[in-house]
Length: 177
Image (tube, rainbow, N blue to C red; front, top):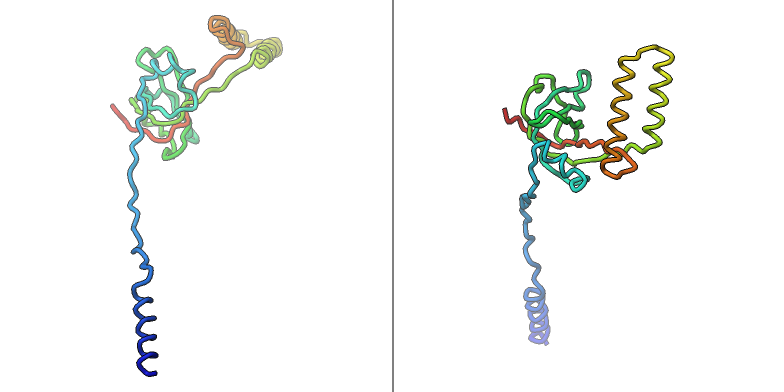
C-alpha cells in the first residue's frame, strides 16, 4: 500500500512539474516608427492646398511676425513673399519667441483650412461700410474693402462659394537659417 501511495504522489508530482509550462514574459521594446512627411516650401504648399488639408506636412518659410504677448502663433512667408500663413503653437511648440522673426523655419504640423462663406463676407462688407460712416476712417476701411473684393475675385476665379484661409497647427519646428 505504501508503494501505491508513494507511486501516486510521485505521479502527481511528475504531472504537475511537466504540465503546461508558462512562457516567460516577453519584454516589448518600443519600435520607432518613421512616418514620411511631405516637405513643401510655403509657395508650393499653397499651390496644392486643397489636397493637403487635414494632413501632416512639413512647410518651410520665413517668420515675419510672432504674437508679442502669448507667442502662441507666428506668420510665415515663402520665397516669393506674396502669401503668408498663420502657424499655431501646438504639440511640442511652447511658443514662438520674437527672436525668430526673419528666421527660416521647417515646421511640421497639421495643415488646416477655414472657409469664409459668401454670407460671412457680405456681413464683413456691411460692417466695414458702417464703420466707415461712423468713424470716417476711409483709408483703413478702403484697404479692408479691397481685401473683400480680392476674396470675391478668388471665389469667382476658383468657382467656389467660399473663401479659403489656410493655416497650420504646428507640432514642432527647427531653425534652418
